[in-house]
Length: 94
Image (cartoon, rainbow, N blue to C red; front, side):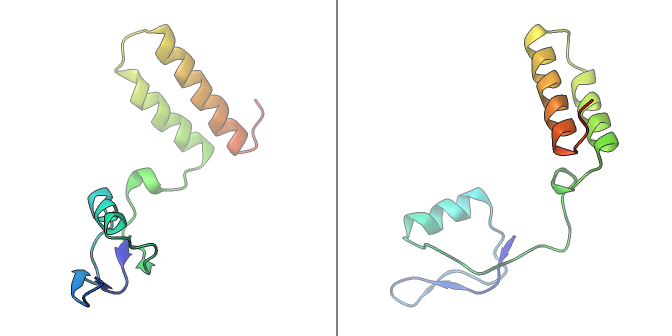
């Protein structure tokens, strides 16, 4: 997301200009300055991780992420929990 309008400091000077990307560092800086709200606009492009995927694609992506990892009971449990979460979220109880 980007700032839709410039954010002004108490002295009226621009602290962050319109179009500034709201990366974590910018958000922290604005919070330190006491800024409580800003007007934002979404970026035209959406990162792949932000996409709303169908269940099959989400499960395939999850499988691909874990494919290169060595066998580990903790990672296996984490993967199983994520599969359950994705299935529940999609309304697929299997």
